[in-house]
Image 1: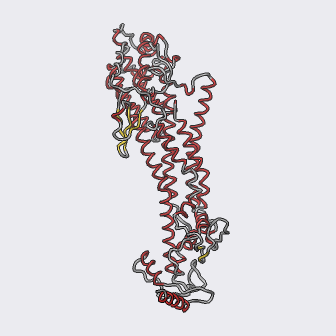
Image 2 (image 1 turned 30 degrees about the vertical axis):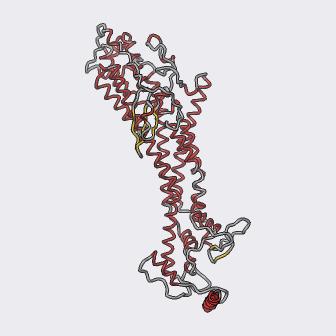
Image 3 (image 1 turned 90 degrees about the horizontal axis):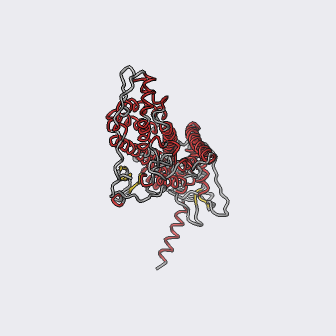
Amino acid sequence: MPAPSVHGALFLCAFLQMFALPGGQTVPNCQEVRTVFHSLHPGSKWVPENPVSGADLQVCQTKGPTCCSKKMEERYQVAARSNMESGLQVVSAQLKRLIIGNAAIFQEAFDLVLRHGRNSTLAMLKSEFPSLGAGAQSSIGQLFLDMSLYILGSDSQVDHMVTVLYGRLFPLAYRRLLGGSVSSATEECVRGAWKDSGAFGSFPKLMMTRLSRSLLATRVFLQALNLGIEVVNTTDHLRPGRDCSRALLRLWYCPHCQGMLGPPACRGFCQAVMQGCLGGAAEVQPHWRSYVDGLGKLAGAMRGEQDMEAVVLRLPSMIKLALRHAVNARTRLTALVSGMCGSTPPARASRSIGSPPQPPAASSALNTQALSSDSDETLAGLRREFIFNLKGFSSFYSGLGEALCSREPAPANHSLCWNGQEMTDRFAGPGLKRSHPGSESRSNKPPEPVISQIIDKLKHINQLLRLVTVSEKRWRARSRGAGGTVDGWSDEGEEGFESGDCDDEDECAGVSGLGPPPRRKRLRIFSDGSIGACGHHGLKRKGPALSVSAQGG
């Protein structure tokens, strides 16, 4: 029965012709516009009952009648700004989650490394030098507290931390390990005598070098992550200027005034508007790319002397050998300190004073399976995974406009799209010339102070990243030129120190290679529930948090 349908179609066409205007334009249906506008502004009475001339409109001007009043246009402009701000938050949400989540994970992981190093050092002192007592324990606790504050940005100096540590340890060692006598009058002199007497050999200097390099790399890494969060947050809160707001109004809401609700914008028109609104963001792009590249280079350089995990896990051995060095040089040290500080030379000390017990044999239950230093379950693996994901956002600022336009519904092939004034088939398609009328689509940078603030922050952190990475390259070049092993590290040996730092007189025979902890002593990152399968030290993730599972290496 096709006849009724044909008659209905003819009637509809005739009915619409009654409302047709000269030039082919039609009268918009203001009832539908009213419904949509009331969803944005319930109870408002600014939508005209019937189409009006629109002579007072500033942006959404048309050749024919319109369903918009000046008040509606103002409200639509507010909505357009809000849409832009929420759109920025949406397109940056994944990047923000990546940086915020990893900043929290790495900060907690570094803190756990320090806590594990502190506990291991305290256990070593209790086992090897129990006579040093609570004073030594307190000094170790203060060192690790200072290190923790340093990587979070404190103004303390690493060399000073190490100097204070050995300045506190030496009077205790002199009195309780070397059998020396310390009075209140000579306390301060003895405290500083370790430097001139070489009481601890080269270990304090080595400790300063290792900690300075590794803690600085860790500190800058965390600073870069936190600054990345600030940059993305600032981008989220970019406020469209006047010209941008007008262009967004034309892009999203001016079609409503002509009774066209939700028509797809021409892709080329959308891109031109976004380029005008986000022109300042393009200035950020080269600095952002440098930030991503610099952070990747630093993460790759955090090995050897710049790997805080490797350095911190060797501190117990380093401090132990420093104390042994003092004990082995007991006769020389007591004579030197006596002459320097005017104290009475001690009587011959019992042999038990300088004979620390041998370390207990490792439990046979421990799993000493080697673990690759760049396994995904190590801190190095986490860093590599994070940098890989971050590099996917290397063009984040240059692609902001495209990302925002991609959220808009795309016109179907051969269909019409909104070009800022009318519906047209000249959308951004292959081989088609783009038409973007309207002065609002011209380039208009976001507020200069905001963009300048972002660029200044990125320039500052990029300079720090370059300084840390360049100094690492220079150090490696000097090490190779001197004929040493790369990084001066070696995975061989039990204690992990170069033979040049100890000699037979110091009872350091068999100790070689000042290197990172053997791979079995590195901290391993576990997923929840997997720790029972292996006996390594573990940083065990429980949801967003991490916890240490300590197991001897």
